[in-house]
Length: 50
View 1 (cartoon, rainbow, N blue to C red):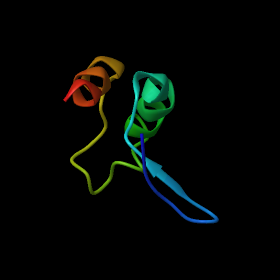
View 2 (view 1 turned 60 degrees about the horizontal axis):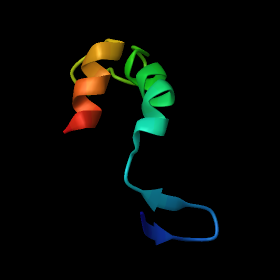
View 3 (view 1 turned 135 degrees about the vertical axis):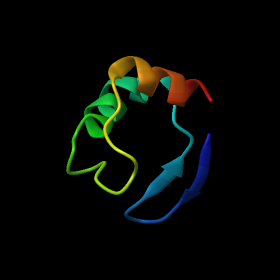
View 4 (view 1 turned 90 degrees about the vertical axis):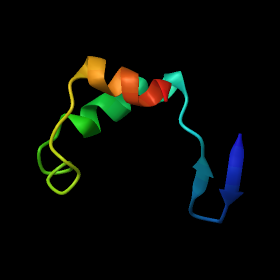
């Protein structure tokens, strides 16, 4: 489901197809510095399930 779209951006809800990429981002300490720390793959799954 696309929420909004511009010439350079598509904003949409996350899906289970995004899990591997999202887990990579959530495991990166630089990305998660100000977001409460890194998450494991399982924690990312739980987050995505919400």
